[in-house]
Length: 193
Image 1 (spheres, helix red, strand yellow):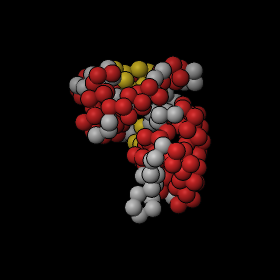
Image 2 (cartoon, helix red, strand yellow):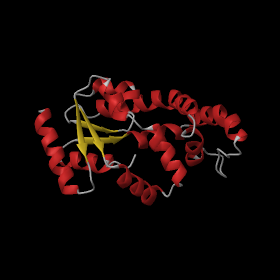
Image 3 (spheres, one colour):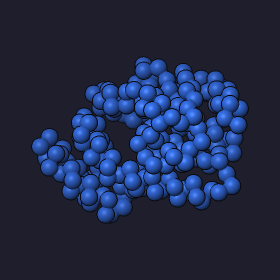
């Protein structure tokens, strides 16, 4: 979270890649009536126990409320992922298939959890120092400190989890300097080719 994946994806787009954002696809998947209804139905009892309202005034899923519920509980997060990840993986596969003559970059935090990772030739793992990530998330998302820290806690040890996939993985440290990130990504591309 807040490591610079979006900036890295935009840099790769400048190098000719088609970019797809797994978070955007997750939002698209959750907007589908059947999946949205399943998520609301599944998490309603947990939300009620914590006095959290999962729906907006129009009856749609309040994703921020869902996030406050699931990111505080590892089991609830796994349950949500079991509902949403298959739909996201299908959307990623569709995106890749629609770009047969273009390299594709998948912008995703937990790509190792979905089947689309099997289609990847290499993984660029973008990381940044914790304080930099914290202030980026605070400024960008306007989330409460406890929510940011809960997400950080859930996402700890990500690099080790990617290493277990045995994928061709490269780590890039993003300290906030876009030019340095561009140079690191150029080096990554040379190493991959």
